[in-house]
Length: 397
Image 1 (cartoon, helix red, strand yellow):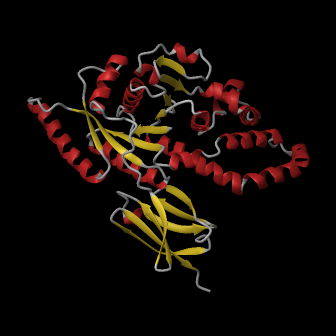
Image 2 (cartoon, rainbow, N blue to C red):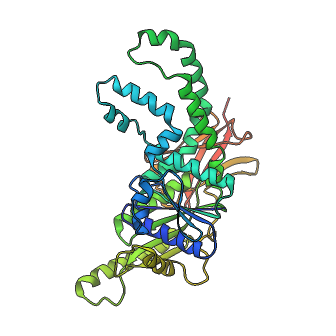
Image 3 (cartoon, one colour):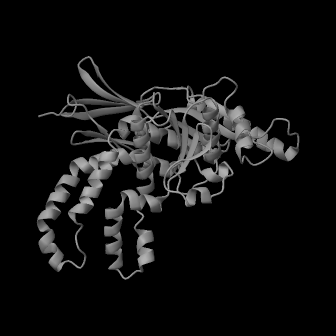
């Protein structure tokens, strides 16, 4: 099975690109699902479908063409299916503050619920071998970072915090509930968390396997958009995912001769050269600006033709380079981390327990170390040729 994640700055056209890719794959005979992970769902709009087809249905995928299913995760229905105990407890706590039941239910939709629900579906479909390709229309870049970091974060919580928290509250709950204005969560709350974690088992390895999962970054030939695309590339690399394609969308046609448009054309060509240089050797696709809004099957087919020339496989793997590796050279250990576009002053490295922690700006990545390196300490780090090398040695006595 192949998983393709489409993301980018809001407004770059990532939903249309994801929908067109899914449509082309389905027309090639692949069992394809395109799923929206963006809370502001627009897949139905992209296919020009009636929104009620999704809102009145359950959480099941909707078949819109041969071999093609569309799914928009409905968080209210997901709460009833997956998050009932957790949501009920949060609502009960919020009610004690005096807010209304409706407000409490709205506030009980915690950050990450939608992303984790989508990830559970991906894991479920992978186990069932239900689809050949799953195309994920992800939220804009910042939210996508949360989506891909969820498995690592939850795994860390379940290993380091969850067992102690559950045991402690089980011991103090009878006494604490007598004096506390808010009841502590019941054991069913923790059972719900445990069940959710089990449904996600294996999804991290799935996302980090470049032969299965690839990230496709959508961008526009604009300076501000390019900067966010560069940051996204670094962040996905830090989280162990491989970007195998950059798609520059909505390029103006060269035939425009108007003086006003000539400035835009010149600017776009300059940024295109930068994109080609920055992202090499990652393939860069160029997609023109269409005369009409890309809406409906026919327009999506036109976009797919521009995106994938005749005979090209949209699910092909274009890059399998690992974002980080563990090596041993001349008896010394090192962690090699791909950090394109990162500046030296932004990078920080330290060790916590058996994990190497790498920081770029406000982002933090925990890299679990193998047993042979868990007792070592980072002694030197250097950033050269887009690669961060962290040398690991035994701590001095």
